[in-house]
Image (cartoon, rainbow, N blue to C red; front, side):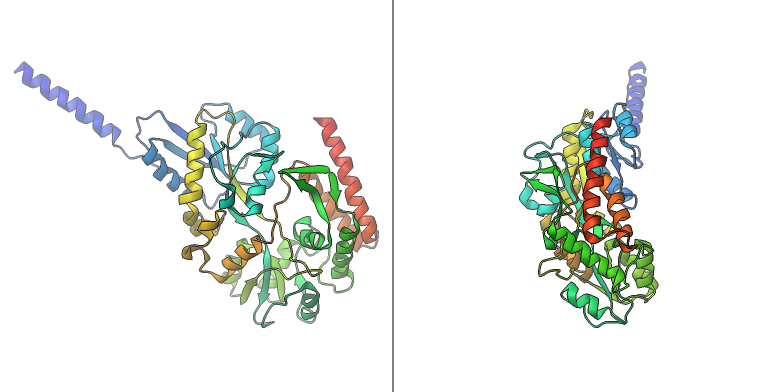
Length: 406
């Protein structure tokens, strides 16, 4: 009797233990009893649920509880959190132009040698993950801008900027935030200008190409868009340009994949094509890359890299469906589920003419300096040459102040 009772109690305890272990995982994956946990932060808000689902899948296969948290922290907040037991092991989905700050703060570790092959991604996507000749991140998704045109106002898009400005006359013009270096990069590159010289995986921030002869030629054209053609002005922000195109006030607009849903919901009839050439050269647009990096403070670094690889290789379609994120991996871009939309194919084609914004902290100073000088040029306070010289002078001064503060 005692033996029978003892056996019953033993079986009951075992059953209770098994029941506890097989309980629902909630939003994370893996056994509830496991001590292996992986915390992932992401800047991609819309895609957070999709990333969590990928975390659940990967965690179940690898014995980890994966928790995905939407965060847009400052460097100081990240540094503090990274030291805690529940801090982020990795960031999956952060714009590449923010990566430099994490690298400079020694919060991002180098990518292990065999984590991925550079040739599997576009040159721009790979370049965005480098700093000082070293790889610090994995490309996850890419984006750029292209030319939208209203099919109720024009039947096709011109192949050159020279034809575009003529075709746009009487049709509301072409609008975009022409004060921003983000949109103006193509004019500069086509004429021989550049931001910082890039060579052997590193930027030379002392070699600035924003006031050479080519850059002055580009700024002269940008000046004409305002003062001669009246298409752009200091009041035409990206939001204003988007609204005018959506409401049929302008025939042409420069925008990104993030604009498509809004235009479709508004009933705007449009198509998207590659950017027209300028000065006989392909129009280079900035390629923004959402990247993944592993915290230098993480105690699960290899697991974190493995999860990032899983997202890149197996999660591309999920991120595309969730937020129209174009995969960084070339093989994924070719899949029918990704490139079946004409607009997506146009953005992918334009990415081949793109380059990343420099992954250096100095880039953060350029945005306002560039915008303010373009506005002064349009106001007649500066010639294109003076605006170009001012941009370089002020950027160097800002860099010196930044160096002194280190």
